[in-house]
Amino acid sequence: MKKPVVLFLLMALILSCTKRETEAEDSGKVEGYRPVYMSPDKALTVSVEGVEPLEDAGKIYWYYNYMFLTDKGKGVHVIDISVPSNPAKVSFIRIPGVKDVAVKNNFLFADNLTDMVVFNITDVQNITHVERVKNVYPVDNQMYPAHVTGDFECVDTTKGMVVGWEKAMLEDPKCRR
Image 1 (cartoon, one colour):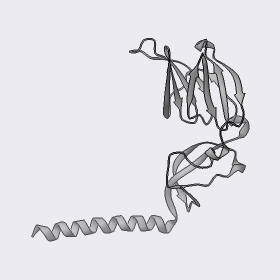
Image 2: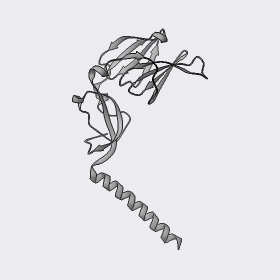
Image 3: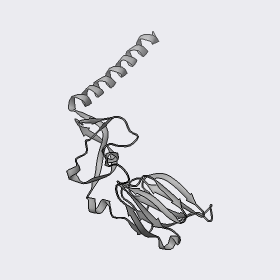
């Protein structure tokens, strides 16, 4: 007697899931990624600022008593870890579009969309931007969300430079990876 009830409930569940998927397909809306744009002037401007809250933690680089923690697409948090049980934020290096950092001989190297930027970190209380090497990274890296497969909104270069991607419901997206 229990088998028909369980079978009925299972079929109802399967049909309700199929109906929702069909409704989403019929409406042309799918979950995917939308580019986040910034004007080229703003996107290629880097600066050293006061402490900021961490929004989307990325890669970590440890150098002597400091940790450099990327905030995906936004910048790099400088954290003093000389007392490991009590890490202290020191500053924030705003680098739009940043994904990765490296440090060598008191210089921090980071990607800023298509360019590489270099900062002198000899004195972490007084970090300075010292160099920009243009067109190190291909612009193609901005045309699709990295490490993601599925639907995404095609990039419109007239809207600015792509500094990140956000998850969103998309109306009939034309791009897929």
